[in-house]
Amino acid sequence: MNKTLFSLLRFSVVFTVLFFADSAVAQETDTAGCCVLAGDTTNDGEVTIFDASYLLDFVFADYPAPDCLEQADFDGSGSVNVSDILYLVIYIFQDGPAPVCPPPPL
Image (cartoon, rainbow, N blue to C red; front, side, top):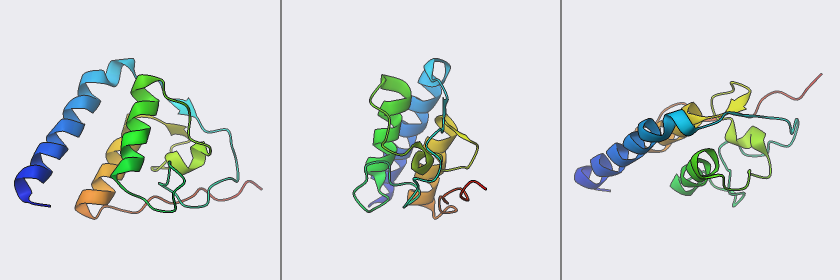
């Protein structure tokens, strides 16, 4: 991906997240133990920009929740919110830390 397109995409995501941040509602993860591939909110076996897009729609546009909310809690905070979207975008485009499934409950 060329630098101009990447910069435009990054600006677009950050602007959208910041613009709609006040209307976002954190969703508590309540599906303990279902995480197979952290970051794969679309359940297609890969972590891609489509997963970030799906999560963006879920958080801001009232799209249906992912089948496993644990897989969408990229930063391990216990809830799905704006920070998870940014975490995944940084992972995909800037080689940030990979999302990790939470440990199984004791």
